Image (cartoon, rainbow, N blue to C red; front, side):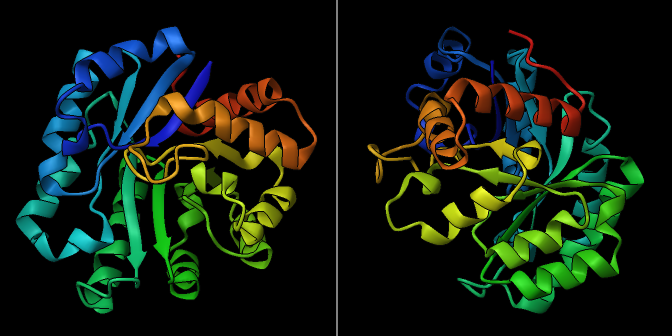
Length: 258
């Protein structure tokens, strides 16, 4: 079964057909989904989804672009959510300098706090890093991110940067971008990264793979990603699916339940 390690089914893009889509996943070979948190408001919806569907798990964390909403009181509430048995990670957390809002120093402060929280609650992290490779790596090193372990979501950096994250035994979330013709740097990184460190993800509803680029994404498109990874690494799509499922089970401590 396919293990989808990063989706956002709490997003409004799924308001019209969320139930039907989620119910259809098992019959289409999707055995587990990790729905990643991004904002404070998303977390309540995520927890409800994990209760409604046995194969949906959650991650709680605040996306760097939403860290301006955090306070000490809200952070304490966030930490309490980690005790839920269906919460399997802290994320997505990290740095995003593309929009540069809120200020990078605010992003850094809450990135560190959430990294340390993950270590306290013994959960892996899901890290978002956009145009912030060096600061992300520095913060991870200084705060011993290897203690929690985790995944670099939507990895988009160079082979050299992949090597640095591998030193901390991190996994790499590979999604629809790898199917784009112009994604040469990512394809090179995928060729370099050991298969045992690759996870399948979509970031739904964003970043749909070819031939659906520009449209709403969903876990149903994961086979296209597996096929491209297989082409790059000289494997069948079935082998990629099996290996990435094993990797996800190892990281998150849960199995495909369908």
